[in-house]
Image (cartoon, rainbow, N blue to C red; front, side, top):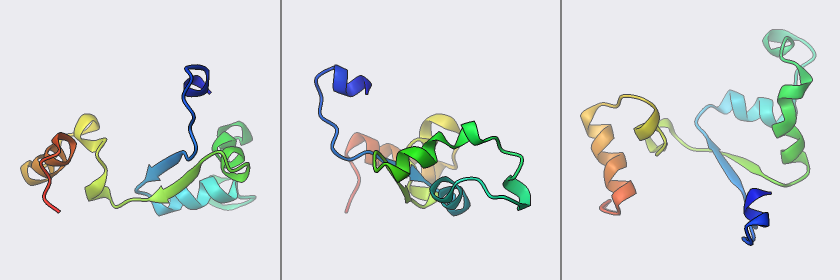
Length: 92
């Protein structure tokens, strides 16, 4: 909505996630039993957005998550790989 009010048209919003269990939980909503039953319904707003088609959630392997560069310490090889992608120096 923020981008819309700034005059931008967002056609496709994709949320990348490296945890397949989280993707399943977001797409299907809260379980009636099991380990996720304690999560309150208000935390499943993402499920509503998925069902309305406003966003989609896709799996991306952990080693390809660019945000990891900013959120956690990385091994030197992983750091260099992500840095090169962000700077446009990655080789295909």
